[in-house]
Length: 348
Image (cartoon, rainbow, N blue to C red; front, top):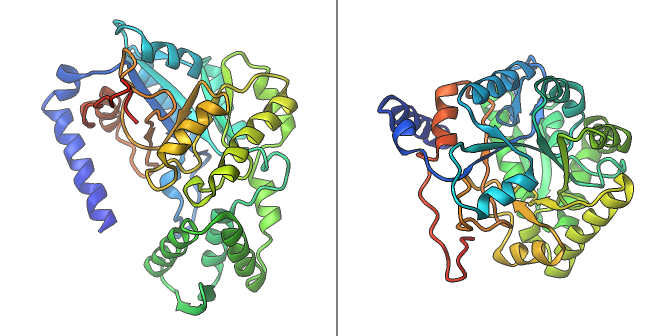
């Protein structure tokens, strides 16, 4: 069903391209693009996280194409300015990267530096500290390796036999969705139980996949790089009590500022979809001192203050799609419904 929905959506976007709508109806100030992993294509059939990856070659194509389309590349400070001012002749695009993965410094940064374009990296500070838990990577490793899997879901033991790719993909989706419903302590306990059962070294996987502070210091020295925060432990804030959620925000900001010696003005809600954070967390982002906060809710940034700076939409690129026609449709804004302001003058 999810696959059918994805392809119906792709067909709608392609039709929008062929009817010329992006050229006729481009609107808003611009678009914020979201990426997670940039690395060479991996072998193997079972890749449940494939949608979150692009290759360095595709990143290069995206940047070259956006330059040809005459988009302005902006950092998040300038995005905030464009979002509250009158429309400008040229629309903008902002490149953002979530998770601070090691592949960013190894594979994405050489491409970005060569093009000399600004970009933003959102850092969950537990990961460069070496104590973050990349549970989604451990889950992928476990299911790829095992054919018989059992675990406790609540108070019941669940058992699965997964030999084919489709079965493994379905099980990954099932467990990932379940884990994302748990409070942080429950999620950590569940993934530790799974890793212990199947001899998966969660700590080693997490450290290997993450940039350290030396990597981030290198990025911080580049004037084209904006470093933002994504909390300390990257929890699903909607499953976290409000005092703990605010502490995650404020501590993530404070740790990054102390480690990097610079003000951290911009924030990304972990996971960032509609189930991952609430309206109260938008207010907390302002209380924590952030100038902006980005989600993974699709949309474009409007002008004249019609988009809430602490609930900014982003276009999450699906790494399984390589169509630059699709990119043109998405960044034009034609694929998204117009933002309707709330009573306060800003949409949330």
